Image 1: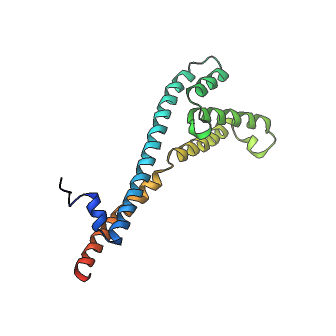
Image 2: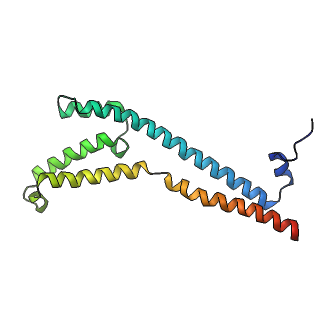
Image 3: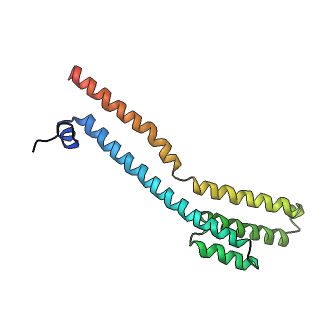
Length: 161
C-alpha cells in the first residue's frame, strides 16, 4: 500500500522545525479549546437541571424547604449553583440588615440593601459562568498566527533555504 504524501506522517517526517512547532502548537490549542468546550457544556447541562428545580423552589411551603429543593438538584455550592447562592445571599443580607440596625447601612431601606447584596451575588455567579471564555478568545489569534508562521516559514525556507 502506497503512503499518502499529504498525510500527517509525511508532514512530520518531511517538515522542518517551523512546521513541527506549528503542528504542536495547533494540537495544544485544539486540546485546550475542546477541554473548555466540554467543561462549559457540562456546566450548562448542570445549570439547566438546577433551573428546573428553581421552579419548584417558588412552590415550596417554607424557605428551608425551598433551599433543600435547590440543594437536591445539584451538589454544587456557591456561585456554581446560582439559584441556591442567590437564596443564601438574600437570607444572609436580611439577617445582617436586621442585626446591624445601628450601623450606617442599617439605615438603608431593606429593599435597597437586599438589591445591592443580590446584585453582588448575580455578578459573582455570572463571573463564575464566564470562566474559560478568555482562553477561547486568546486561542483564535494564536491559531491565526501559527498558520501565518507555517505559511511564511515554508515560503521563506523555499526561497532562501
